[in-house]
Image (cartoon, rainbow, N blue to C red; front, side, top):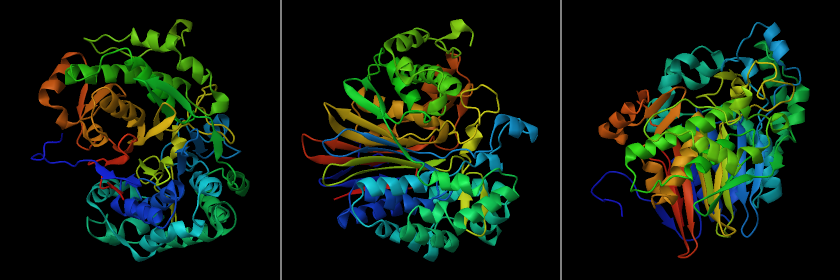
Amino acid sequence: MRDFFQPGRGPVLAREAAVATSHPLATAAGLEILALGGNAVDAAIAAVAVQCVVEPHMTGIAGDCFVLYAPAGQDVIALNGSGRAPAAASVARLRDLGLTEIARTSPHAVTVPGAVAAWAKLHRDHGRLPFERLFARAIAYAEDGYPVTPRVARDWAEEAPLLAQDAGARAAYLPDGRAPKAGERHAQPRLGARLREIAREGADAFYLGPTAESLVRFLNGLGGLHTLDDFAAALDGADYVTPIRTRYRGYDVYECPPNGQGLATLMILNILSGFDLSDTLSPADRAHLHAEATKLAYHHRDALIADPAHLPFPVEALLSDEVAATLRARIDPTKARPATLWNEAEHRDTVYLCVVDRDGNAVSFINSIFHAFGSTRLDPETGIVLHSRGSSFRLIEGHPNAIGPRKRPMHTIIPGMLRKDGRTVAPFGVMGGHYQAAGQAAFLSGVLDRGLNVQAAIDAPRSFAFDGVLEVEPALGEETIAALAARGHAIKRRTVPLGGGQAIWIDHGRGALWGASDRRKDGCALGF
């Protein structure tokens, strides 16, 4: 039971349907679509379209998308809506141009966006209401304006110096020469016009004709290798793929397969499954085990996860009991250790939302432009800011994640789905760039190991072992932080919260939906 004298929020309880997003206007848009008779897919698309307007630093129509969809009584469906590099892109070509890495502001960081193609395909195959109806709120907010929320305002201001370096981004995102403050109105009429076109014409409006022509012209002007053929090829580029999964504490955890990092989540859970992570464990012990498992899984992620056509090992091998046991044995409960590959003997910013509708369909949906405001490159003719996902590529010949023609980069964005005995229990997800896989594992451990409700598990203090340091939120507590430092972790104290998250728990026994949305963001869960 939550302590009602303490600040915080409890889960939202509903009977028929629920929506959870990181922005209240997006949650309201999704709920409106459900009330009009739309299903979970309709509501998710309506909500994410609003987020592309009201959370412009986190997502956009020129981003990428991954979806897990669980129709009532059926198997989980995975949709890969991530974009591909231009056909002319290669390590050799970029090396010839003098590059040693792909910076976030580089035109080469812009793969052909996959989100709109994914939205259209998902709706065509599983939606209910007319596609055009789903964009009404997003169009209105883009054209007439919306009030900037506090967390969005804080993040926006931090990116102002970089936005100022691009003429299009400066004009669209720094009115009066500064980032909007909380409560101030912001509008993007050019983006609204693009949303109207997509609503009316579908994905063709983005990948064919004037919008594609303008984006290609803009990117080429920056030195990009994109062509109209690259955009046309992406029109049908979203792929249904077979989800990957593992079992944790009697539940089936589903993720999208590579090129997403969902595999890392499953590897962390497989490693942790051999430890007791209940509340009998101290917070320092728990954070240490999560950190050590995360380091091991992410070491494999960075070395091995890539476009599925270029994976050096099958997913099944990395999810095997043998690999989990080998990695688990490398964890010292008393000391932080460097990560190693299991085969070492051979010497070798984002929005998430979820919806459950009255028919029991559940969707786990994530849409991203990667860095805050993506590449910060905004085409002034279309009002579209371009993502930076291609900066994940390596410029190393032979690396699984090396850039190549029409190749997908490794992605950090990962929707999750939890099931038990063949029934969906919870769509869930965690935002926060590289943190997402570790965050999902921590969330699931909170629910399944500690018995927390979904809101409490999302709210729990966070830590993240990445890039040689252990990032910690202040709420972890000084005693716990000191104990982790004593084990050899290089502590980095967070001044900004780690990520965000949403989940909806389907309580089949009591016929209730428990919706949760992270207090670290501005959003909320709602239902009826």
